[in-house]
Length: 77
Image 1 (cartoon, rainbow, N blue to C red):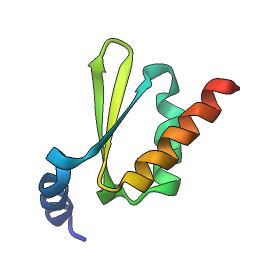
Image 2: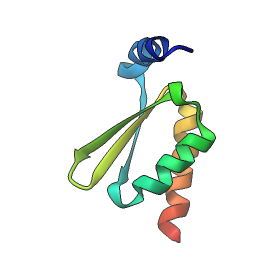
Image 3: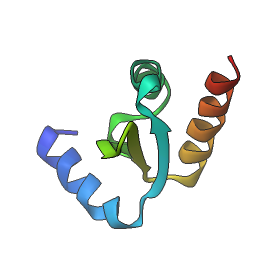
């Protein structure tokens, strides 16, 4: 996909996206996980949506569930 196509695709599902939040301390680890596990066009990152909190919107609920599960494993470490 061309960058403009990715942008338009993300706009088409953004309002219906599945939202997951995480503490900003985990930003680097979770960004790396996203790059390795989810296609770029299937998520949108929003930084500092609340103090010390970032949000990721997912197009697919299964991707959101995988991400949430991964966050829980990080917190337990």
